[in-house]
Structures are given as structure tokens and as C-alpha cells.
Image (cartoon, rainbow, N blue to C red):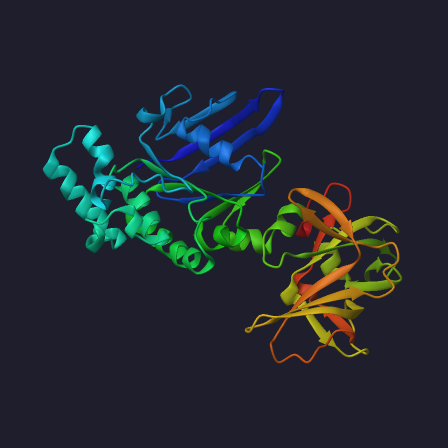
Length: 388
């Protein structure tokens, strides 16, 4: 078991293409770290450098305090689990799991002992004599994990191991992988583009974009306190609503103009987020779908007039897509992979299944002032409370 440290790690491919740019990241011994981000953000390249499958262009990478920049993959004492199971079809489950130990020269008795122990952890004991073709997708993935576990490595590296499974199996295997990792207490770096996997599995989550680390924090911290507009718009399902607005004068607070409508943000709250006070400053307002409530027309606080454009009944909740009336030149911010794009001003609200809203309804909605987020309109960084 060991900790992992990326210090200024950079990878530049032919043609001067920078895939990972000056990555600083520490994974504690026993920690489950998830690297998440859109396609092409550099997360898999970072994992492959850790495994020794890609050379490092600059910086240092250490495992257990040992710099491994020029150490061969087989000598790094890490085990990798891929999205394709890479099982030998002619071998039984037991033979697949014990193959690396056999090649390493361990005794038959020792190989059998380690395979039985791993099979017990993975609940594969009754399948040891079967071949891969007789297993389900989830069972094959557990065999691939077993092949890694029997080696007792310093770290596990997992590259989108659940991407080939159907939705139900993905949920089951998320729970299973997290359980096994906690049981073994081995540092694990897990790569995924699925932010639900990231939120539900990681002790901490590192969000990447364009080869650069955007934020690393426990999942709930990322959700509640995103460092910038990209993290806010990437983490969460559905993601945070991001609406462009401009500051305007307001008695006792800060006013925000969203097209021809205005929101009044209480003075203390606006000040705590270091909102610009000059008129016409561009900011991006962020609000989570669960922080939007339908109210009457006489309610004070941040309210907007909207129209229901679409509703999605999901059983336990309804997602209501709302266009903002009189938005004019205002727009919403969304991310297509890692590129910010402007779209007509829309909000998505999460409502109880009993909510009686239909397409075409005109609704006055109130944004929970205690849960609003504000981002610099130019740089996209969070306007922190108290300037923090």
C-alpha cells in the first residue's frame, strides 16, 4: 500500500498537443480518488502515465515515495483494471485470476490460496471452475478485479471499468467496487466520464478540463462549493442552471438583470459573495434544480417569471424545463464536452411528483437565496463568500 503523488506532471504528444498540463495531485494511502471530466480532458492519459504506459514529458510521479518516471510498468507494483475485461477465454475463472502469480513463479498452493481469498471477497467462489463465456458482464468484471486483487499491489488503477455494463449492473458494480476498495484499503485511482459514478464512489473527486485540474475535493464539497463555472455545470444531474446576468442598482442589496426581469439579492448575501456593485458588470448566476420553487406573484426575494416548456416525469420527481420570460439578450450557459456555449435562457427545476404543472403554464419561481452561486462573467471563477 502506498500514496501517489503527481507533481507538475505534463504530457505532450507529437504535434505539440498537450494532453495533461502541470498536474499536481496527491492520493493518500487507502484513498479512493476519481478522475472525472469530458472526453479528451486528460484523465486517461494521467492514469496511463501512472501505470507506465505513457512516458512523462515533464514533472515527477511517485508511488510510495519512490519516483517512478523511468520505472517499467511491471516494476511499479500497481494493478490495472480496464473497461474491456481482457480475460483469457480458454482459462477458467481461477486460472484467469491466478495467471499473473503463476508467471511470477509463486507456488501452486500459494496461488490457490490467494485466488480463494480474492474469490471470497468478490463472491466468486462458486464460479471458479467456469470459463468467461459462462459468466454475466458483472461477473466478468469481478474476475478482472480479482486478477488485480491477488497481486496485492500498492495501488489499483481503473479505467472506466463499468462502461460496458447495462444501467442496472453499473449501479450494482458501483456499490461492489466501493465495498471492495474499502475492505482492502488500497489507494485507488478511478477514471470515468460519468459524474454520477464520481459522486457516489470517490472519497475525493478530481475534475479535469483541457488537461488541467479544475478542482479536487470530496463529492459534496464539489457539489455545494464549485471552484468555477465549469465544475458547477459539470457536476450534478441535471447540472446547475447557469444564467448570464448584469448587475444593476438596488436599494439595500444587489440587483441582477436577467433580460428585462430583475432579481433582488439581499445585501448581506450579495456582499458575502463579493458581487460587483458597479452597474452593468456581467456575472453568471448559478442555481441547482432543487433550489427553485413555484410561488405566488407577491413573494419577495429573487423571483423570475417563467413558462413551462417541457416536463419529464421520473417517478420519484419531475424535471420541469422553464423558459425565462422577457430574457431578451440574456442567455444560459451550458457545456458541450468542455466548451461553454450560450443557449436561450432556460432553467430546469426539480419538483415533487405531485406538482401540478403542465406545458404552457406560466409560473413565478423563487430561487433559494441561501443556495445561489455567482461566477465572474469573464473568467468563470466563483465569486467566493467573503472574498475567500
